Image (cartoon, rainbow over all chains, first blue to last red; front, side):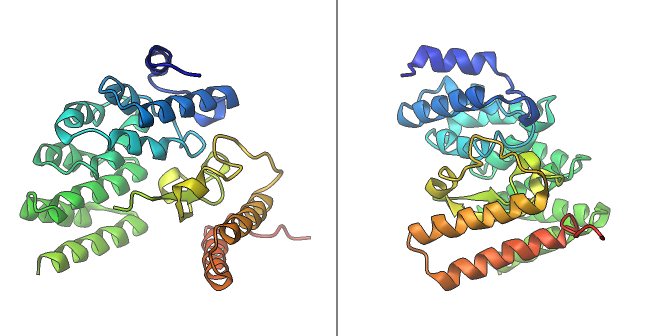
Length: 177
Length: 95
């Protein structure tokens, strides 16, 4: 049975977790136990630790469930750590935090998300499109969001990202009409 | 946003040659996602075709057990197979 100290200590030791190619069954099981512990016992100290825990790939399907833990907290508690994690030196941390940003729409996210729209990494660009669109869909910086997505449309070279950008722009315009 | 469901990768991300964001997924209830054999584990099989076959079989059983009707299951799984084939990673080797 895991307790708070074990859980915090585990996360502190895994900033971030190893990539999936080097991720053992025991380690991901423990990580999932820690996730379940904080899901049942929300504790603000886990916020930055989870946000900086993501290794490369998806932690065998566990990383996508971390959002449920983060969603337990108010935006004001999450946002400062989220803003920092979006600038992480680890690609995997920027990627997963860009996804999580969609759940916490706030005008402070506009600038970092706009930068992430220009990342070389396609996955991060996809996630940034979703999260920045969520700002406009939440009534935040509507025209700025539309402008930056239209700029991205002009600069994008990948066909599937272009299609997604166009869909999202249409969706935002439709919801505002 | 749908907080009850999550994108479940088929085939699992850890063995895919495609990046996480571009991988083929089915939007699955989180409790079903957690019951799959690829949750918290890497499935070791010799090739992607076998991974896909195993995933489809597993999802068919799980979705059936959770009360989804056969036509919905068939349509969703057919779409998964179609999208995986469209990635070009499932071309049969020439004899």
